[in-house]
Length: 446
Image 1 (cartoon, rainbow, N blue to C red):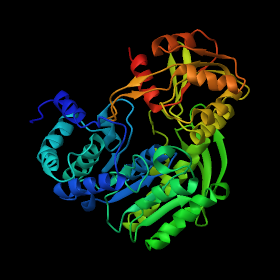
Image 2 (cartoon, one colour; image 1 turned 90 degrees about the vertical axis):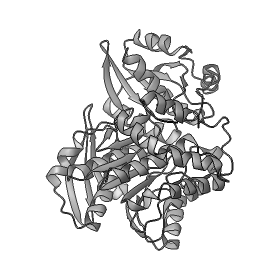
Image 3 (cartoon, rainbow, N blue to C red; image 1 turned 90 degrees about the horizontal axis):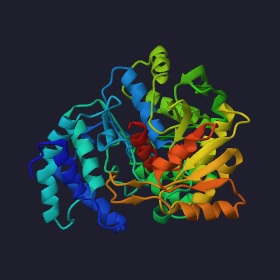
């Protein structure tokens, strides 16, 4: 097949969406990815890579790290997932989605290798595997200086985890409970999967968190003879202040303190993500003997925008607070920051969750500051995972009943649900899923 238009590219990729939600044996899928990368010439090992795994904060840390690197003149490739707007968002250069033309050009170049895969013992790659292969291939061809790559799910068998270079920097963000059906039901089992991005002689950057998690990080780093750099958020991050426009904090590390660091992202947790990104950036720059200008660092942090991360928007005269928090850990952090920015306020919550989520652990964080909870639904088809459905709103309502919450409405139609939320006088919080956020953005654009 010849890719001539972006529509051709979308149609081609959609033909590789798995027909079932059962992903098969993870080790076989990973072997398939490695074989695919070999056919492409192993571009991932020709690149300087910063690889980010974790449960919460991966995307933010990727964006912040990329911004810092670009502020010092480096050309930065960034791979993220899922996307909010369209597939181009997953492959970025200097924090901008690649063009449709570039996407089509390089997808067309790798199609012969995709077709070779079909004839191999591994069979055809998945949509996600093709996107990751395309990302590394494109970044190599475009000669970027450094790649910041976010894992998809887990780490050990993730398609992104094919970089074997000893100079890779492995970054571990906060680890918690999510995707337990794939990663296990304990922090230990989840951490074991995620720390497997660490390769021999890598540099590992993280921060102090749950003891079970730290044990796995330290064990894997030791096993792989990797250098471990870590800080303690409680000790090293001080004086966090939040407003509707920015987060400000002090960060002390290695006997040096940077006071009043300002970032345009909102949330106490963004101080943690920023500190982790700063440490990652400094490590990369030091490894390559490049000078750091703190004036450029500070300036760049003031202009970061990440879709769906505690984003405040005006819509028809109403204030919308949009956040893609989709597990208990993320929702707890989001609500903690929300009530600090808006003390003593109640909100209209417009929520929906992807089918299969542990939404009871999410809901218990919402009820404290909800005037009314409007439960809706979404149907998302553009993530390369087939049809993504939201949980039945009535089931979510039943959980709220068990939590003795009565102030909720079920409005399955998303357009009607948004209109219903707009009828209230309170500020509107839209949260529960990045897939929901993507559908909301489509509505807001109409």
